[in-house]
Amino acid sequence: MNNQDILYYLAIQSAEGIGDINAKKLIAHCGSAKAVFHEKSKNLEKIPGIGSYIIKGLKDTSIIGKAEKELEFINNNNIQATTFLDKDYSEKLKHCVDGPILLFQKGNIDLKEKKIISIVGTRMITNYGKSFLEEFFLELKKYDPIIISGLAYGIDIFTHQLALKSNLQTIAILAHGLDNIYPKKHKTEAIQMQKNGGLITEFWSNTNPDRENFVKRNRIVAGLSEATIVVESASKGGSLITADIANSYNRDVFAVPGRTSDKYSKGCNQLIKSNKAAMITSVKDLEYILNWETEKSSAKVIQKKLFVDLNEHEKSIYEYLLKGGKQNLDSIALDCKYPIYKTATVLLNLELKGVAKPLPGKMFEAI
Image: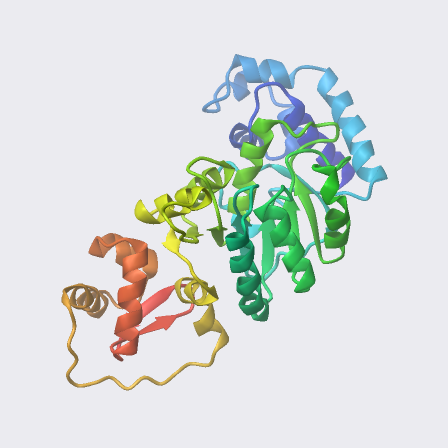
């Protein structure tokens, strides 16, 4: 997009009362961000969700001046602005109805044809969380994934540091503008990751890192990724909000289990208990549920056994696959009325018994 296009996206962002969902409605109806400001009010009123309050905000003459000032900041600070219609905008985020209409980024970010995972958790990281992540990254780096987190204290910054040490592209999603770094203590890592990864935000310059902005940025953390991993969390916290958002986007969620007496394992244990997350103890769990191992290795020839003993759950899923042909993990779990984690376990057993095989894209078929 050129400067004029970005200017009108900024103007829509600065108009009072317009969120990303209504902004997308306006742009789709009018054909472009610029056309929104030339459309007659009576025509705008016909768009579902667009009322007099929003139209009044669009007619405010001061918003163009605000947009021009922010565009000047963008151009003077080597910031890339990407709209939701650009080819460089994340394909995964495009599928999120409330994804930002405009993102700002700094660094060397390449999201194309990459495995992308988010790792989140408590700001009060324990030795247990550190130990898990250190071992996890030793196994993970062979897949060269992009690592998303939020640059906050605790799990976030430790994750970024391990990604940097492993030479993995890592991206921090910020809850403020690109004119500062919060917390300031993490400025060194923020600069380092711009060589292979970088910083992404939807917020303008001079935006404070207020509490509500952290909640808002969590949808980008979840939306950019194919899976979100919660390493440690108390019974309440921002990482649980991120997990809920990821579930609402139909993305895979994983949680690291811990002792019931540990404060910062209670949130993870609850996610697993309520079937909102699959349990993860190593990269192998990630490989299996996301089907990374199958994509990476060459196809294996599996000899079907003539007589195989199957339990009740295995029979149910095997017969479902025989009848329906190729099916994805989510559909199998939904139609067979099993939670995702149990379905994944049964499918692994069927694979080991030689009566089913995994396919790319979390697909499975009977043999």
